[in-house]
Amino acid sequence: MKKYPNISFNEENINTNAESLIKSCCKYGVIPVAVTKLICSEPKIVEGLVKSGISVVADSRINNLKKISHIPVSKMLLRLPSLSEIDDVIEYSDISLNSELDILLALSKSAVEKTKRHQVIIMHDLGDLREGSINIEMTRELAAACIHLPNIDLIGIGSNLACYGGVEPSKENQSELVSIARDVERSYGIDLQVISGASSAGLPLMLTGEMPQEINQLRLGASILMGIGLNDEPIPGTTQDTFTLSVEIIEVKVKPSVPKNSSALDAFGNVPVFIDRGERKRAICAIGKQDVNFDEILPKDENIILIGGSSDHLILDVDDCKSNYQTGDVVEFTLSYSGVLQCMTSEFIHKEFN
Ligand SMILES: *Cc1c(COP(=O)(O)O)cnc(C)c1O
Image (cartoon, rainbow, N blue to C red; front, top):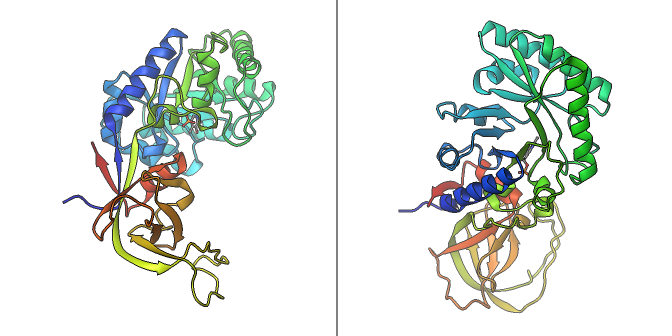
């Protein structure tokens, strides 16, 4: 018997997205890295992506990369390594993004101890104000450190945009990254394999042919897994139908839409607000705010009104629905990026493949 609540992945659609994006990237000389943090690097999905032609898989958490250590694919750690996890970074990732000298020193020391080599991409901040140095001298210095540190291979320069500060990847900022990479190459007489421009947010620029041709890597998460990019807009050639949340109804009753003597705060300390629609048929589902923020899910049945809930209960108004919902029935929802992320992280939500 199927278990609920569950989040199901449409593996075929995810793989089709990956294949389509690999093809479009190829036209522009870009090799995509598949970012799998949204699905906590679920091994079954990662295996499918590798079969689709993905050569590098990236996650922000080393614990997720640990889960796919048996899969023969190059692994990239996206979040800057923490000092407390350096040995695991060397053990479970081949490439990491870096912006701090102390971390590079620790990576080198651990790599020497483990007789492994570790590849590094130095992050430069083009204005989004998350990771990376904002001045070229410092980026140059970090690159120099990598060149001299034992068992560390400097493979490229990268940047992250449209994550914290909402700065869009543009022709200008991507060209700036290229000139920084060229500056580093000239300063030290080296060749960099990788200029890692942006995330899925960089796809619109690439697809309109405006991405500088020297940008040869994009790190793609949302676009492969959900068919979306900059501002969550759909990416041409991909499908958005990749995840579904299914929850089970545990009570159906006709009740008034406004409580009789509402004076207390709700379970989350907020003043509850009600719209009086009269007596309505309501369904309670076995999922709650502990699992997912209700703003991040949308019933597939357009006649359902999501009216609220608490930590463990979701209350739906099903009075306008054509189907006669009963206890034990299953209701399906589409999810936003952060809705998927929360469901994937909740141990109470079963993961289903189909
Ligand atoms: C999450 C992340 C990405 C992928 O972003 P998407 O919008 O999912 O494509 C790329 N690079 C870094 C550094 C990230 O943290």
